[in-house]
Length: 211
Image 1 (cartoon, rainbow, N blue to C red):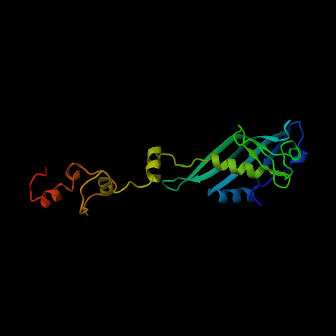
Image 2: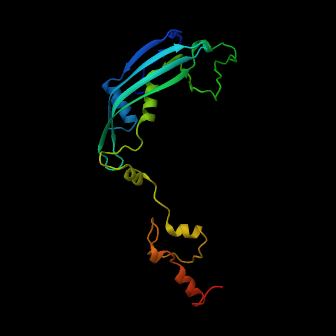
Image 3: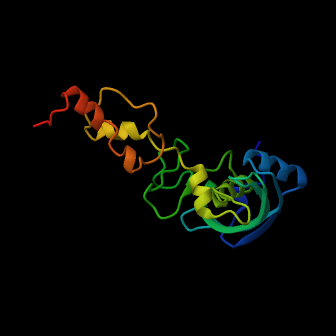
């Protein structure tokens, strides 16, 4: 069972618009926070308008909001924000079963290149709470940062380390037999270490210029 579950029977949705208001309780908020790796969530709510289309699909228009506390990716301090968003989704409906284009197996065939995604119903139900949780996860800031932390600092802290500069030299065709253990790693070499293998080349050729 999802952490925040609100089931609606698709055969109960008609062509007239119906509106539902969802509100997660304290236990549900705590469970969703754990799933999304957040410090906390409260006031998770959504307003859902739904109706059945002429094609037998269920069209959902959802507005949701929540107060969430994330962890700063640099300092791990609490970052409290209010998130709010809107999404539209189509779900297959009971009347789609048996319509033209159904092969009788109970599966609904929908154009995969259509404009709107189509969610399958499960046992004739749509879980509105789970849809809200999924879209909430997509709305969250992937790089939350505390006040005073610059965005560039956040990106630098989360970016993968650069490759060893000696490997870059090898990739560029440098004639390398020995790697200099004192060569700084993870940053560009300065003027004095720009070509750390020039001395080695000179030693191998006896000090003669290579022709």
